[in-house]
Image (cartoon, rainbow, N blue to C red; front, top):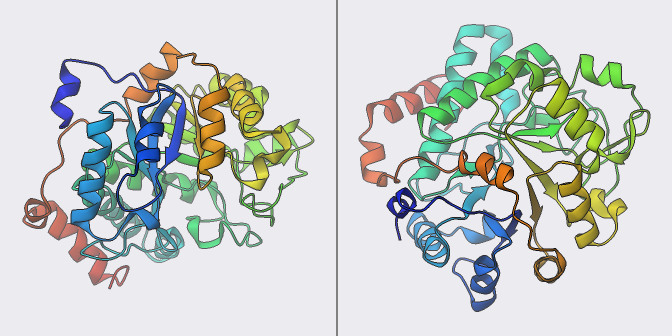
Length: 352
């Protein structure tokens, strides 16, 4: 089934983004994707063997539901799900920050090229959205963020992220800034711990939250951090109405999609069961919630969460779908823009 069917029927995505087991759909995957609460599918390295297989997998997902958003975590560096069979192994974003220190204009050109190559390659396999860019600042103490961040400087981070997002958009892909208001200051990894950032609201707004303000309307979606900022709110940002409504929506005037981070992570455990966490995230202001690597919890969530479809959230989510049909890899390779982007990145040793 192709995207052209969406011209006659608007996507009606639910609020849950879930994953699939392997390189092809099984009966449980199909059952979960078919559920009216499902609004998206997120892919991981285990779902990729080759471009042909990945394209077959996304076609199979579209055949079950043509109104689910197909997503992936594909940033470059150590967080990149597709690295073989022609996919360019993109640099960690810190490499762009280091290039900025030597040549500002070249760094911005390289950021556009990275974004373009990243999105153009994924679009050949009909993936709508990659959860990128990372807007966290690199304070030097966070192993989980580390070289995924562009820079310690919020100005440099904003400029490079803006150009990377421009590259994404040139290839037909939206963006997702993460992890609001900032995960880079704390050493703990929210995948396996509950990080606590003891800074004040003014300190965070003056540093980590700046890129979200400065990027403004160019941000299509945002993912909050599973981090507690106790001097601001007792709840992690993704479960906090203060952070999501008062700060992100009201103060920073953000009107895009808010995704929760993965509810199976340890950082989400403070909210209780997966159903409690999803309810808390949606009540706080998230439009979509992620549940990954835990099919039992996904089933529990699909069974227990009330089927309430938010029309405002759906309006926002629809804007994240890729607007055009995917091109073939052969056509991509023949593209002057694609070849020029690769050449620029190779010339400056950002890719092999």
